[in-house]
Length: 66
Image 1 (cartoon, rainbow, N blue to C red):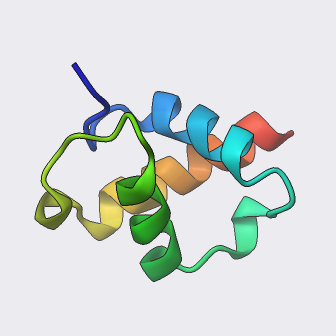
Image 2 (image 1 turned 90 degrees about the horizontal axis):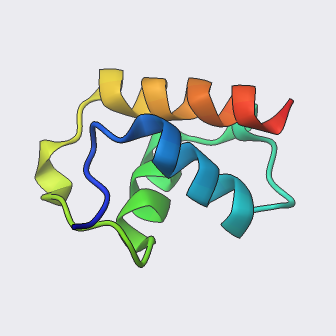
């Protein structure tokens, strides 16, 4: 069972561990989408993401980085 788009906190944690030198506040959604899809545990349909989902992931990542 892998990560799905709705697993925003888990995705944010994974991204913070993989992209340690990135300030998530400045990540473009196109890059964020690509990075999420590239996570080894990610197994959802790449076409099911929305701006709202990407924003939720970014907000969770920002919270995780603080």
